[in-house]
Length: 206
Image 1 (cartoon, rainbow, N blue to C red):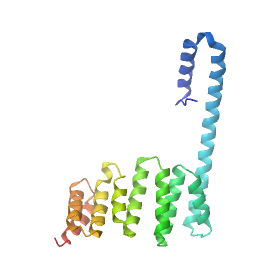
Image 2 (cartoon, rainbow, N blue to C red; image 1 turned 120 degrees about the vertical axis):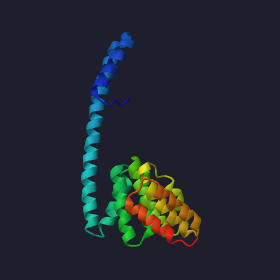
Image 3 (spheres, one colour; image 1 turned 90 degrees about the vertical axis):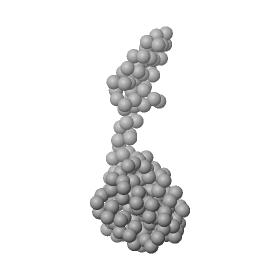
Image 4 (spheres, rainbow, N blue to C red; image 1 turned 120 degrees about the horizontal axis):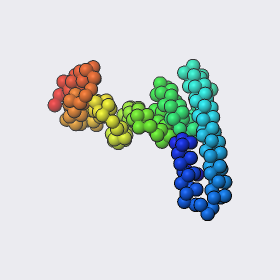
């Protein structure tokens, strides 16, 4: 069934149908009514699913932040079953829990799952940034650099440059780190971040 943005588009579609299929008017009426009813049912169902997911997400995250160990399994189940923004946000929360516990493998797994579930570009960038930091902690420098390639948008330029410099330095590439931080300083970064990257460059002995 073709999905339309609003009922006006549905009406126009029905008009075109009747115009192009005058000899099958009766069939057209049946299909038109079925499409309208089906659309309303589908949108109503989607709203209810979204409302339920939102409520479950809020309860799940509240329990996680209350540091109740028994909720970890329930949160993982929710994140795995909800392939949408709520699943992605839950995966982020779980990843933070595991980072705090120094269980980096589990944190990375949750972030990978959240990245697969997220459709919004900004959310994908947030998850990718956190995943790259976890990979750096795991001494997976090449994987971290690869993950950074997924981050889009000018607003991320300086932040990505800062982390790229850290990753390259972990590989012993001081010149590469210096170049990354220099590029970050030249970008539209915040004064605080620019100053931090300048300090990092000054501390390099190259």
